[in-house]
Image 1: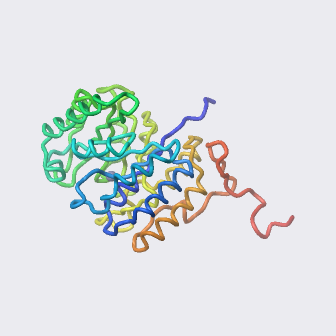
Image 2: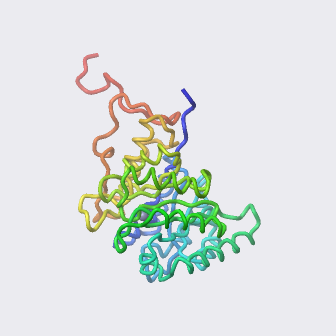
Image 3: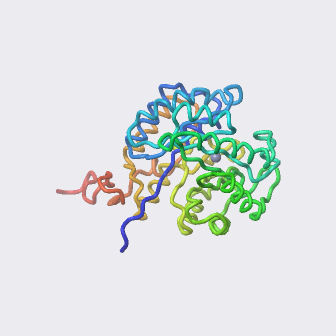
Length: 328
Ligand code: ZN
C-alpha cells in the first residue's frame, strides 16, 4: 500500500452558490460560513467574485469577505476576477489565488463578459503583468479557468481541440495553471478522462490540477471519479450544492461538498476535512437562506456504521454495537 493521497476540496459555494440565487447573504453570515468550513478542515475557499455590484449584488461585499477570510490561519483565499480591474481589487484585498474564467465557447464569452477570446487573452496578459510587478511574497497564484469546456448551452458541442488550444494560450499568456469547468453540467466521465488527458498532454501534468464540476444531470461524482483516475487532485464543490439548477429541479448546483468529502474519505483519500463538523455548517446556510433548497445525500443518511475516515483524527462513523437497543 502506498501512503494516502491528499485531495484538495475547494469550496466555491460563497461564490458560485451565492451568485446563482436571488437572496443576498448578509456579510456576517458569509463570515460565519467561511470560518466554520475552515474550522472543519476545508483548506481553500473561493469567497467571491470581483464583478460590478450592479451585475451581482450578492457578491458586492467580496473585498470585505476576502479581508476577513485572510485572517483565518492556513486558509487559502480564492476569488474569481473577470478582468484586470477585478484583479487589481483582488490584489488590493489580499486574495491568495485569482481565477479568470475564459469560456471555451466564444458565443458564451461574448454573452457573459462581452469579450472575444482574443480580448480575454489580452486581459490575462494585463493581469500577469500586474502580478509580476508585485514582490514574490505578495503575488497571488493565477489560474485560467476554462468554462463551458465540456459543452455550451448556446453553441452545444465544444470541440476538445478548441479547449486544448485555449489552455495552451492561457499558459503562454502567463497563467500558473489552467482548470477545466463543466459550467453547464454537460460532462460525462469518458469525456472528462479524455479532455483531461489531452489538456495535460498539451500543457504539462503540473499545469492542470483542478476540475470544477456541476451536478446538473446527476453525474457530478461520477465525473470526479473519472478525474481522479487521470490524476486530478483538486475538485471544486459547494456546501449543500447551493444554487441548484433552474432548469433541472432537484439537481444541485455544484457537486455537493458533503457527498464529495464522504466519497473521497471512504475511498481512503485524505481531504483534511472532518465530516460531522462539515455537516453542522449547513445550519448556517439554512438560517441565513431559509428559502433556498440544500442538497446532498450524506447529510440526510448520516455516516455509515463503522465508517473510517482517511484523514487522521477526523470523526469516524458510529461503531457497531453503539446503536440503541443493543444489549450490553
Ligand atoms: Zn460553476
